Image (cartoon, rainbow, N blue to C red; front, side):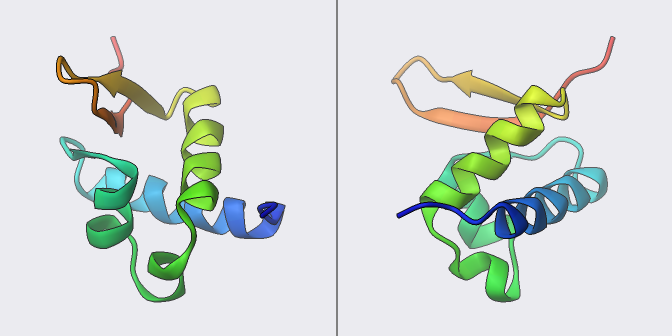
Length: 80
């Protein structure tokens, strides 16, 4: 299923707002859907959430981290 650019932008905005309020947050795509997003955003597909995270990662807002066990988590980018 293709993701709609307007929905990806909406999800990206919601994730960015969450990270501003919770700068030390880090979670998986599923955790982000369950805990960071509210309302309609929480009902989005993992593909749409992942696309939003990729957009935020490309913009330097989010870091993608792979934990020793292989799980991928996303967190706010660390600024130097």
